[in-house]
Image 1 (cartoon, one colour):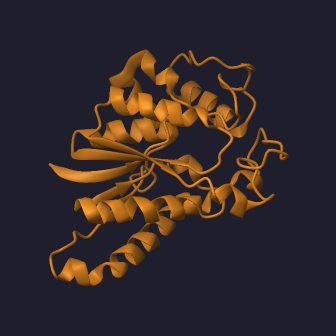
Image 2 (cartoon, rainbow, N blue to C red):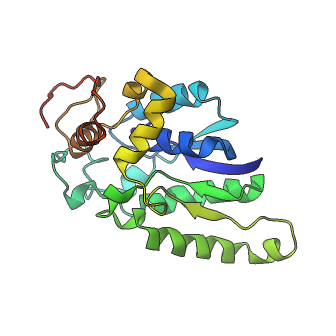
Length: 227
């Protein structure tokens, strides 16, 4: 079976993307601690890596990124309020480029042929989630290892997302729910530093909307339940 590296946050999108790929790839998961407020996702990434019986799971600490982002980002800066609707303050500067660089280094070492992350059709407002970005960074990574690829020492990688396949958050949710059942409600979406979903932030609201659109009764515990 071919190998793939999956960027794995323990969130709804990454868990469901993993399930979507699992029948076709031997999966190696990588989770990043980058100074995010939502550190609960690290705990749940460990949990779901075991539940899904992934081949290997690495947790990489790049907490120094929080300092580089300074006071520009609501997901890492403790003084900034997390918005309930999309605002550019929740776009972490080239976060996926940083994640993909590290994940792809591992992929080349593992001779994996796919590097995946859970960007979907609903993420079009995030520049580093769009298929155009994924294709360009894939081209750059392969160019960076072109001699090893030509010599047969490395395998060419493909950077893949559900967005590229035309899948929405609701599509992913249905895939994950069929496999996990009520375990799906343990995935983590919230941007806040809390033990249960705040129910207020943009990510919680996107999660609620996905369950609503999928016609799956949302049993996630929220502090605030209304969309």
